[in-house]
Amino acid sequence: MMGLGFVVARFGLFLQIIRQPGSVALHHAASFGIGIGLVLLGTLVHIASGLLFLKFLQTFDQSELPYHYRPYLGLATTFSLALIGFILAFYLSI
Image 1 (cartoon, helix red, strand yellow):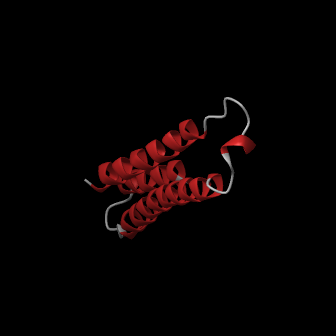
Image 2 (tube, rainbow, N blue to C red):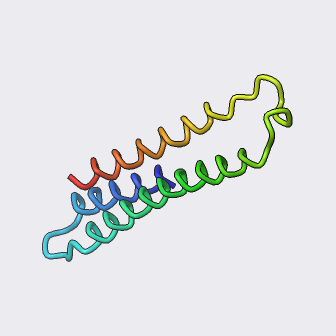
């Protein structure tokens, strides 16, 4: 979702470059807003899924988890991608 948001935001820039003189530049603003929204929505989905997974893990006893199971690597990846999403949204907005 975050990747699609980046593509949509940059597609508006492409439309602005190829637009003909006298045409309205509404497409750029609309695709930019939709793109930033998709990036932020994808970021929020990452955060929500990480928090729900943490809550799910708390329902298990340590003895119920498989030997050598390391759930925090996946959580670190999830929250790292969320951080990248916020950075991407900031980058697209400047």
